Length: 268
Image (cartoon, rainbow, N blue to C red; front, side, top):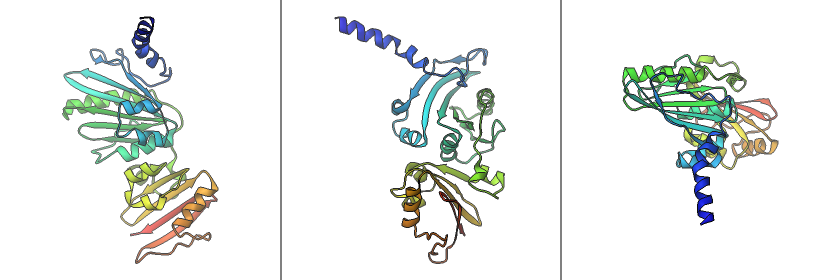
């Protein structure tokens, strides 16, 4: 009987213990932010507990580097909005998730450098955070409400932003903003550019930025250790001097930015 009572007491306090894990600077919303709205208590996920929320996709977040997530349901003005706030390990990790999640953006609201709005979803990447606001109606009022929620959350985020120009020097910022994605492992590559999966087979400890364009596709890869760089160049037939044999009519060029950072361009 004692054990049963102890177990029930633990279960009663799990929500409180979970909520206490949220840092004070986490950009969560309160009822005071949205007068008249009904805001659910947040569900909080850390580490592998994320499998309890997105069993089929948690691996991708963990591969990028996931810290904490809160999931909140908001009802206001007749609409319902699921607000997901993912705190990643840094700006690169947050942009990586954003870059492989956005799809057919209608526009890109100016809440941060990286946003994507569709009829049913607003996505925002700012600092180490990836934010997704999903509505069920797809109406103009839903879009307005999502914009309000998104702007409030984004307004509370400060700190370092990702600098993609160090991966893609000389490329116009607007093109990078719309046409590139970032991967930190096999799942990121599979989600963003599955045709490159074989090029990274067995490769670890890298950050890859891929820019797809009409005239050329660019692959910029930075490795965290020399062995990974060496293995990548060997399996892809890249010589130390930077020459890479062309396959068929493909025109490839290779540039070494540093000892562990390589850029490969293929002209279409």
